[in-house]
Amino acid sequence: MSQSSQNPYLWVERSLQTIHQANWYRSVQTIQSAPGSHIRLDGHDLLNFASNDYLGLAGDHRLIQAAVEAAQSFGTGSTGSRLLSGHRQLHHQLETAIATLKQTEDALVFSSGYLANLGAIAALVDRRDLVLTDEYNHSSLRNGAILSKATVMPYSHCNLNDLQVKLAQHRSQHRRSLIVTDSVFSMDGDLCPLPQLLDLAEQYECMVLVDEAHATGVLGQTGAGSVEHLGCTGRPLVQVGTLSKALGSLGGYVAGSKVIIDWLRNRSPTWIYTTGLSPADTAAALAAIAVIRQEPERRANLWQNVAYLHQQLDQHPIFNQATSPYRPLPSASPILCLQMAHPSAVMAASQQLRTAGIWVAAIRPPTVPTSRLRITVMATHQQSDLDQLLKSLTAIAA
Ligand SMILES: *Cc1c(COP(=O)(O)O)cnc(C)c1O
Image (cartoon, rainbow, N blue to C red):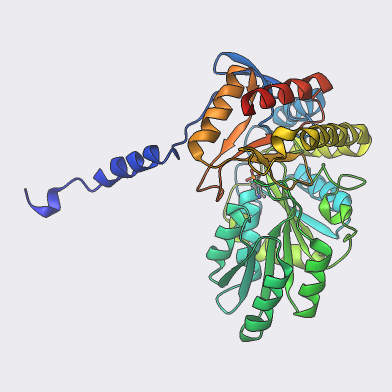
């Protein structure tokens, strides 16, 4: 057989085999119920600690009603890009509501948070510029930096000294500079030191883009996010976020100054060249923002649950010894991670929890450098739910 007649796709099977051997293989699992703190997964009723639906809004009847009514009035699809046939009054209303929540001049809704990050970064910098990115940033921020063609420079996680050293060394060789960071780190649960980071940015004339995906609706007095929580409202920065986590819908957004948003409408490829958000998703997110404003008790419940879980884990010797195979990572959010040495151990632990009726995500490389159980707390968990989780975790760890 000649060289040229070999199957050019053979490598896929071999590469999949390698992934299997490393315990990195992933597959989907089917949820057969409405979203919530209790779900049905592949035929089993489980207590759910694996959802981003922090406030329990994805199954809320008001969001569902808003989505149904929007679909009935405006159809299922928006039929085109926003600049052509895809713009509706609902988009404008949602953008106004986001800007009001964030206390920014304007906002722009994208079809996902991922696309919002890609499009915002690609519009703000190009090959003449410098992007500094936290090493633990979300994939969408890292790929946005690559898409922009700017020089990309990772700095160590939340390490302002490292960031400053890199700024001092490299800033002057570039035209514009952009620092990008998660606010709540999605696979760790800790919080970026935003006020100090903004001070550094000011000193070196850098723009800052902060990803509030896990903070919007969760952190801050009014649920505006970590920018509000850390007292940075009104400081010059670009905020990105998602409609798909605490807001229980689908889509993403950028919030910022009028000129920045105007620039994005003219220069952001992932907004210009993609179909506008569907009427149903848009209306559901709009309803979610109203609920967040009207029901601060949801956020209060969430943080009460988070505090309880933290306190119980802190007290328990199993999770505190230096030799413990389950080491809690620093967390300032409803995301609580227990780090483990090996992907196979984290898979086994998550399987044991599942047998005990609890769903906790096992996160492995290459998503994160070290394997971990990732527990996400919801406002709608009862204390008995948290106790059941703690009981199973301690039994498995013992
Ligand atoms: C989930 C997430 C995104 C992507 O948002 P989607 O709307 O799901 O595309 C972006 N950034 C971070 C930090 C996230 O956790």
